[in-house]
Length: 401
Image 1 (cartoon, rainbow, N blue to C red):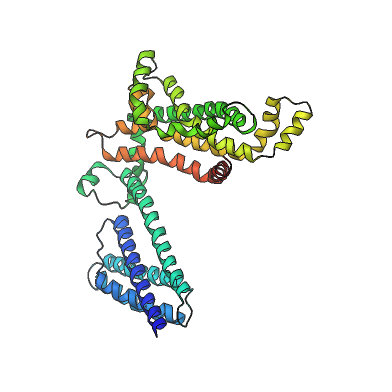
Image 2: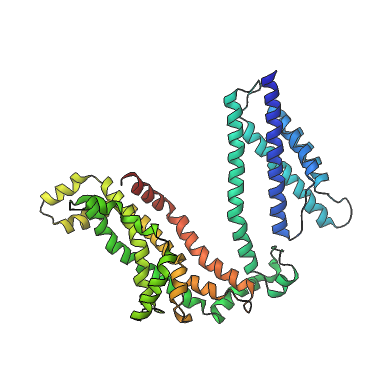
C-alpha cells in the first residue's frame, strides 16, 4: 500500500510540476511572439496537471483521456472566448491545446520508466531525476533564447513601435525589407563596416601571433627538458589569477607614455598577452598526449627539431590548433575592457567598442540591438560550425597537464 501511494503521489507531483512549467513556457512564448499578455489560470492548470500525471503514469492508453481533460482545463485556464474576434478564438484555442500537448507529452516521457505496479526506490529517484533534468533543460534554454529573441525582434522595430509598446516583440512581416532598416542605417550612418573590419583584422592577427608564440612554447614544455620546466608548466595560467581590471591602469599609463594608446597596433600587441597563456596550456597538454616515438623516429632519420615540429607534430595536432584558434578568435572578437580603455578614435573602434558607443539616449534603441546581433551572429555561427574541434581540443588539453 505504501508503495502504491508513493506511485500515485509521484505521478500527480510530476504532472503538476511539469504542466505548470509547460503552461508557463507556452504563455511566455506566445506573449513574446504576439505581443499580447497571456495569463493562465493556475487553478485549472493544477487540475489538468494532476489528471495528466495520474492517467499517463498508471495507464498508457489513458494518455488521450488525460490530454482531453487537460485541454478542457486549459481552455478555462487561458480564458478562451467563444464569441467575438475569430483570431482571438483561434489564438486562445491554440494556446491551451499546445499547453496540453506539451504537458501530456512531457509527463509521459518523464514517467514512462515507471512500471504498472508499485515503484521501487530506484524507480522513484529516476523519475524525479528525469523531471529535474527536463526542467533544467527548459530553464537554461529559456534564459539563453529569450534575451537573443528580444535582441533580434527589437532590432526589427522602429522608434514609434518601441515608444508605443516596448514589450511588444511580435514581428510585422508586412514591412518586407523595411524590417532591416536599422541594419542598413548602421552601416550607412554609423560606420559599422569599419568596426566590423577592425575587429576581423585584429582577431585574425591575434590568432596568428598567439599561435606563433604558443606552439613552440607548448612544445618546449611538453617535450624538452630544462631547468624550471615543472614550475613554468604550472605557472602558465597564473596570469588569469590577476583580474584584468587590476592591470587596466598600468596598461593605460604605459600605452599613453609610449604612444600606443588609441592605435590598432597597440591593441594587436596587448590582446595576445591575454590569449597566449590559455593557448600554451591547451597545446602543451595535447602535445604530451602525442606518441613520442614518432618524433624520435624523425630525429633518427636526420630531421632537425624544427623540422620534426613542422612535418610531424603540427599535422598531428591540427584538431587542437583549430580548437585554440577558435577560442583565441572568440576572446579577441568579444574583448571589451581593453578596447574601451585604449581606443578613442571612432575610425579605430572594434565591434564591441562601437556597440558601446551606440548606447546613448540620442541613438535609437533598435540600432543598439542591431549592432549586438551583428556582433553575435558571426561568432555564434563560427562556434557552432567548429564546435567539435573546440571540444576535442579542450578535452585533450585537460587530460595531460
